[in-house]
Image 1: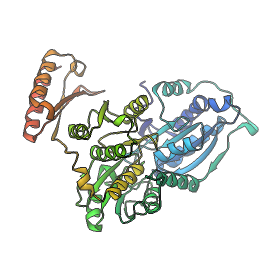
Image 2 (image 1 turned 180 degrees about the vertical axis):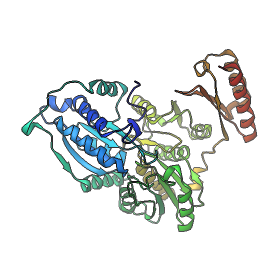
Image 3 (image 1 turned 30 degrees about the vertical axis):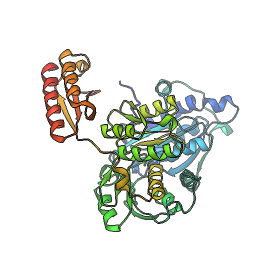
Image 4 (image 1 turned 45 degrees about the horizontal axis):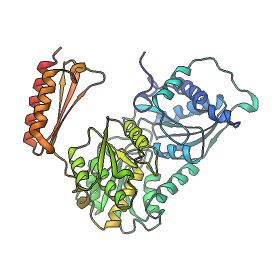
Length: 454
């Protein structure tokens, strides 16, 4: 049996892979591992539990609350709230752990269980392993007054999160910061359907909302950050200054300019990095990105006097690098941005409100601001049926990569990414011109196919 935890909690098909029994067992184990600090300090451990609007989240969150309470943990159930909202409350309320039921941008039938430690941080691998090892072990069940209590308070959680988002604005947040801006928002029929528009309105924006009527089945359905076409049309139709598209649990955000052109996570990072640097809030003048961020972002940051640090793909690796270096901004091309002065994880609504604040403060259009990051043509070729384990060591492949990189120079790059599970290697090439990127990528793919054939 493989490791239960993946790159972002436990995720799979709800009621098949992610069952009520699993949710209960995981929660008991998490209570013993993460709630131990509260017990050592002489108080009953406490937890915050939230979910996105998926129908399966109803029974899964009930199972999580039951498991925690049965292990002696007091539970505050905040209902439907974005993942970063649950993370924020975990830290702000000083509880011992947080739990979010969501499969993020995945289709509705999926669901997942994410845990947060004290302070609202995602779990490191060793803590996940400890929870997994604790599952199924005998334990002393509390009885009588020692069992945990479950309190439901959706209004409290939402209000506290919206207040936090507005307070993140320059000047500690004022009601008129976004005055004069019309912003279209696609909530993906997800967890931000209420709090996302509420936060932007509280900051003074005129907000046009689409896909904010979750019914338990329509989350991420041809909408939100994975399908921004509706938002692009809505921005133009409403004459909005910009648009923001969230995913199901609102931990990511993509933007749209007034002409309906998509502004991706790389461009948003570039805009916010410059804004933070001007305010003296970009620690070490450094932005953390993954290896999949477009080279155009790195070049634009170099021109702006900002250093970039690259990590492996995944927001957890971005966050690890940020915490290790004390950096304040990092993220992914997908729109998963972390602003560590205000959040412990990616926060789509926070990203949207900060981006809108930059537009308001500069008086420049989003298109003008985004133009500073010129995305270089990027080509990705999947080469299957190969020995992925030799991609980083085969002399012929390495020689071909070195030759390609020398030919591309400063305005191009090559990245080979072996699949973690399949006999497949992804060949990614960026170049100044589309034709050159195509030519180099397919030539390298041929070399990989020949040299690494099974």
